[in-house]
Structures are given as C-alpha cells and as structure tokens.
Image (cartoon, rainbow, N blue to C red):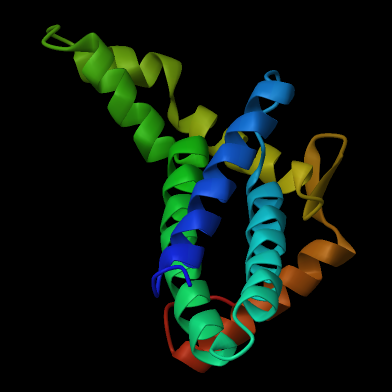
Length: 165
C-alpha cells in the first residue's frame, strides 16, 4: 500500500510530466487552460480508478484524500499557469523589470503595452473564445457570449459581488 497521499502526489507528478511532454510536442502553441483542465480531470479519474483497483479494502478513504491532494495541488498549478500565460499585469511587470533602473522605465513599458494594447488584447481573447465577433469596425456579442454573460451575471447576483448583468 502506497502511503496515504502517495497516489495523489504520483498523479501530480504524472500531470506535470504529461503537460511538459505536450509543450515539447507542440512547441509553437502553448496549451491553453481548457487543455490543462481536461488533462486534470482525466488524470484525476484515472487515479481514482487505480486506487479502487489496487486498494479494494480502503479505496473510499484513499480516493477522497488522494484526489483532494491532487485536486488542490494541480488547481494551484493551473491558476499560476493561467496567470502567467494571460495576465497583462504580469506582462507589464516583466517589462518594467526588463527596463530595470532606466529613467523612464514605465514610459518605455507603456510604449509596448499601451492602454490600447490592453483593450485590444482582451477583445482579441474574447473573439478567440467565441464570445465576441467582429462586424466591420464593431464587436458583436455571440450567442455563446450572451450565455456566458448571463451566467456570469447570475453568479455575481448569487454571490452579491460587483455590478454587472
């Protein structure tokens, strides 16, 4: 019997190794968050099945504890990955660090990441996700975008956070 959290830790290692392999197989395209989530669910399910097969007497407790460990660690990894992959704040901060102690470091960073860049980048991401589409010079909300907007507004209403919807 592997120690209480061994399966979960092994699943985390498998997740990281498989993700690294995916990145090296498709080096021109960084895996997006949906790929990470599908991989997370698949390895979690496989881990549960392995525990049930290998530990038939103690599987309920082991599945619960190991999937909790696996889920927590990989969720932290996915969050960190998504932030570094898509956060404009992180990109701006890195640009500031690259300019170091130069007199106008912030101004130089803003030349590359202007206010228009921030908005254009976010709009492009919404288009890529199918939530918006372009019609000439205008952006239009797609049916999928409307569904997401309504769902987001409902969640915000249920949690009583912020404006919107």
